[in-house]
Length: 203
Image 1 (cartoon, one colour):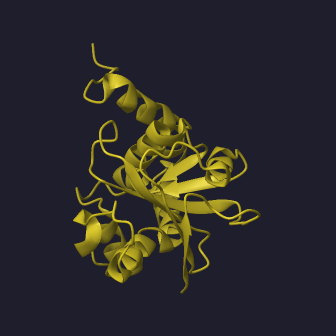
Image 2 (cartoon, rainbow, N blue to C red):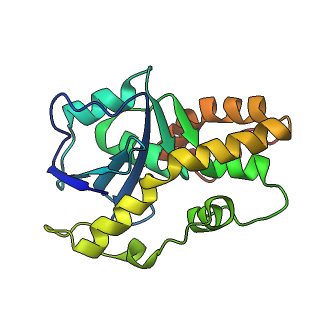
């Protein structure tokens, strides 16, 4: 495994394939308040590409091109947050998307444990550490532990998607999940625009 690190944007002409795992690290969990610090990506080949985003940065041409490419599926875990913070930072809505947390909630109705650590342990027998989750991602230089943590958040999403797709098909819920994925970018936009705590479908 190799972790490639970049400043501000992905390099020119980097091809990560048609399915790319994406995750974000921020200064907090409020996408309307806390800034984006790191975006990590993986094509599922065992390598990660980690981009540090500067404070007040609003443009990343190559990253934006990838996230908006309709021919590239973006894999997230809890995509609602990541899509929202990317929208807040760069003004783009990533699409098309797949969220392993949404897929898990639709497929794995026998449990309320849908965190990435839980999913990897059960479905792939992989144990990951979440120790660096609450560290200072706005630091000028990321520690080795932070980089390794960021990498684990995207390294296994491709394999996880395959397992969840098998379960969704088995339970006849694949179409339902797909419709949820289609709506997810709009759900993230609603969060940023002020409807984060409002059920727009209630009476």
